[in-house]
Length: 332
Image 1 (tube, rainbow, N blue to C red):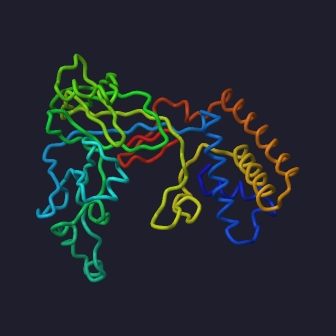
Image 2 (cartoon, rainbow, N blue to C red; image 1 turned 90 degrees about the vertical axis):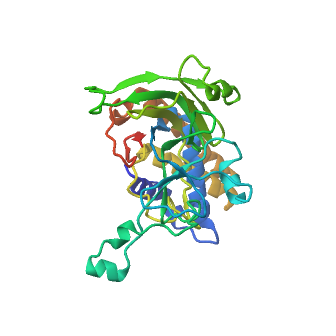
Image 3 (tube, rainbow, N blue to C red; image 1 turned 135 degrees about the vertical axis):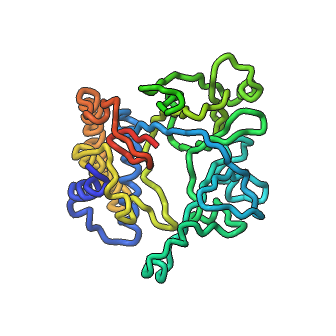
């Protein structure tokens, strides 16, 4: 089931409540639906998403400076600065974890599109174009950059998720003559114990995660990738300006979700319960719907424990280079 189908299904279970009128009622229904989905994930672990986020190493990653002209394809590290107040609020204030951005081509003008000219593909970003604000010319990429201390650092800001393991994948290239990829687990150090990593004194390769990034040592080879396995909750609150992508638009409707009809029915009971309490002031109906929600949540827990979906249990999910979600697992 995709997100659009799920929204339609849970609204169907709401019956007349789906068409309730009043100031802020529909937004309140959406917020209640989001709260119930988060609650279901916290009580039913099988509903949480499992991600594999891949980081690679690259040569030529540069420090971003507002006086340098960068070309399309250039990758830069955007360091934190004291004057970047919004950036500090969003990404924290740790030394490591500076994200890497890559310059991309601009969109063609109407005349360029009409004439078929391709000059816009190599038109560089303007001098001073900031990756933090100029999202039309810069995209965030999962590439590690060198630290001043001799290790590598990466940006990691996955909220509402936990890291279950970290592995290194060495993949076949013409230089190493491998026929199959080789995998090895690496040690995860506490952030407070990151200094041996920076000094290169650890006996095994390891990684340490801070509040918005991580450090890795020894460095990755050119034919290696860092794979971070995470498990987390979907919050369904991604914003595009002032618009919510999940409830306010159809932008996310094609996205695959793990929820099905039982979850949609449970969400509807949760929404009905809070509408009865906050809007209708009917505590008896509130207790009735909330009790029903709790019963359905228990049933979902039992069924998900006994009958896992095939795509959740599949150890070899399909993947794409763009990190497309396939089943319950995403590979970036």
